[in-house]
Length: 123
Image 1: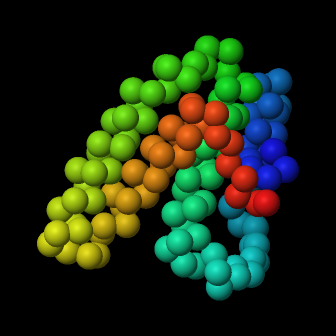
Image 2 (image 1 turned 90 degrees about the horizontal axis):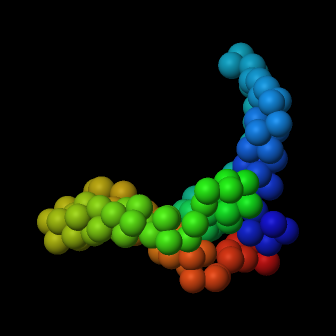
């Protein structure tokens, strides 16, 4: 997962799979510097593609019942739902069109995994 990312998600699944507990402190304060290039729509779209692609990669490794064909119907529905949301906003209003576009990109990232393409987001 060097170039796809998702190591933290994979580790979290393995820890819980083996009976471990993950805890958090709601009062903890964390600071993070977010580079300007990570605040663009282009970055957000690329990251959504990667997240979907990597999520299916992790499921394929950790879930014995996972099949690519089993994931297809959900991806198709996600894609169609994204179109349903995006098309009216592209025609009439620009405020919420990113929501539908992100659903579409999410589905495309999943389709890419199913057809053998692994995200190389960090390369």
